[in-house]
Length: 245
Ligand code: FPP
Image (spheres, helix red, strand yellow):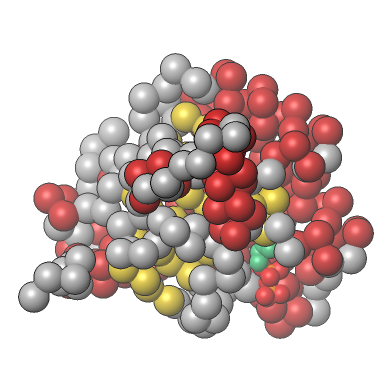
């Protein structure tokens, strides 16, 4: 795929030599988008799926190697059961419908979170989609599902304790990193959160330590190519210091 469209002046402002390797997104504002239009919240989530498609396509176009989306948090179970069920149904539908898109663009699907607790139909679709795309070498596309960063760190520590058995161990940063759900990917360079909220909400707390954070007022269903382009351009203006001067 071509790396930029000459017809799009905004995309042409993106410096191709300074692209983020890993973009992570907290997709927020589906409910408010729906409320503004007097629709039910589920309609907002449905529109949010279209925004996901657009973002995937632009990441492919720009040859971004990693994209991670916060699709269902460990706290989202507290929503009305109708909404929770609708979210898992949307996920199953999305994976089935978009397999052609994943295959055409050599996208590899990945999922992180306590996947053992998600509804069977969704778990089966995820397993199927991960298997179907496991040899793909294009965009590494991760969905965070029933994900909580604190759960992730607790799971890593428990795995280390299990490995050590009765032997006392001294835990290193690398040992924790190697047992996080994200052990096979680099930390995000850029974190985007939509809808004007400026929180991390228990998303990738370990991995975002040095990421650039971009917050936009745009509600997730309205998030377009231009919003992603603006976030990348903003990221490219930042001076990443990692604690140095
Ligand atoms: C936040 O909006 C969004 C979510 C909790 C879920 C995101 C899910 C989707 C975009 C669709 C389903 C996902 C896939 C992968 C097919 P909110 O409901 O918290 O919005 P609000 O803060 O305005 O109420």
